[in-house]
Length: 197
Image (cartoon, rainbow, N blue to C red; front, side, top):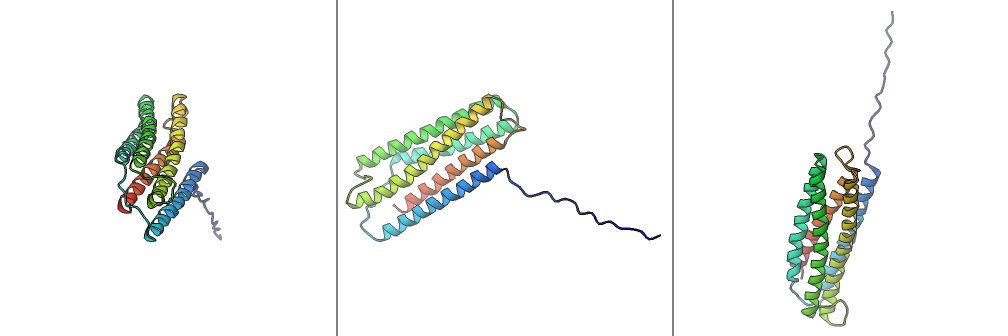
């Protein structure tokens, strides 16, 4: 009797990512490229001269603390959803949204401190050259924080409607990833501006 051998290949599980998660990661990569280009242009322009050295507004220190705290509350919200502690998740994500708005208000107040110090967005002197980079970098980051706050509010509504829970975490994971990314991006920009002012 001749024994027959059959070779059966097991179907390999495709290494796939949720398409929306992939979209968020792709967006974050493009944001990194934009800010990488801006900070590179900043250093090149500063090296050319006609540059005003300036102190960062004290409010930027405060907003850095606020955004770090918001990252902690976002993680708290994520862990709460993961444990199906929906009431706590609602509180934590609400605090995150409030802290996001507080960050934006603080950044605006930082801009008013810059204006009071004579550092303007437009003009012909060295302060305008230095200031324009500072306003554009912090303003563009602020615009992304606005999108992050909107995302947080969308997730908050979904949590209130019980659409996000331990069995359906994708939207919460995307929001948390994006929010932590914005926090990390601000830390990078803040340290960069401290070192190259």
